[in-house]
Image 1 (cartoon, rainbow, N blue to C red):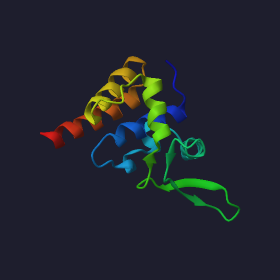
Image 2: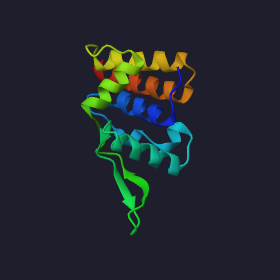
Image 3: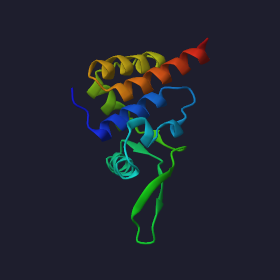
Length: 131
């Protein structure tokens, strides 16, 4: 399966969202090894498509988005959750931990190592909290 950059960022947000207390500031351009412009445009698109909400952007006087300055309020929309679960074939009835494990397994099998590493990190954090 092919996931474009926007979809990979959305999957990372979905994975982080599975925690009891998501820390959306963990979603950074560095996770994907991309520049600020690509990261910002992908987040803009995700908000425009109503897959996420709550990104706070810095803007120049002419209204142009320059960068996300805060990810703390980012949340998945119901539409975004359904979108990711449909694309990845994840059962909505699974627990958050099971969903995060599914993400790690599926994206790892598709060769998205950065996204797999992120999902494994989230899964590990969730396991530690539940011990």
